[in-house]
Amino acid sequence: MPKRILTGTVTSNQNEQTVTVSVERRFTHPVMKKTIRKSKKYRAHDEKNEFNVGDTVRIQECAPRSKTKRWEVLAK
Image (cartoon, rainbow, N blue to C red; front, side, top):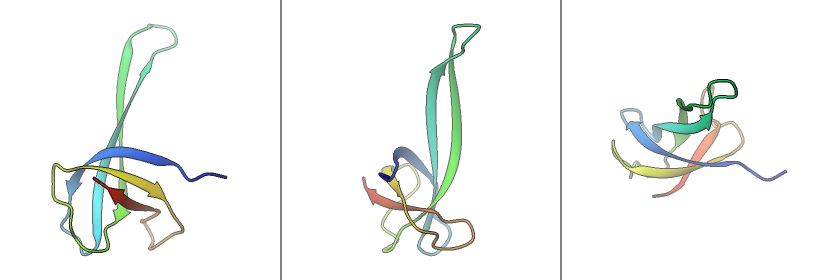
């Protein structure tokens, strides 16, 4: 099964080797036919602490790195 890749914005980099990435998805509501925006936060592994708040990054699924980390940063 292929690994999912998502694009989002870094919202926090305070932890060592970890960034919090906010991923927004847009979809049309099935009844109202209005475009809805929903966002979800993912904690991703950042090996070299190279990403800062506001950066747009791509994250990919990986094996669990810790209790909350299931994603790793690919690139900007």
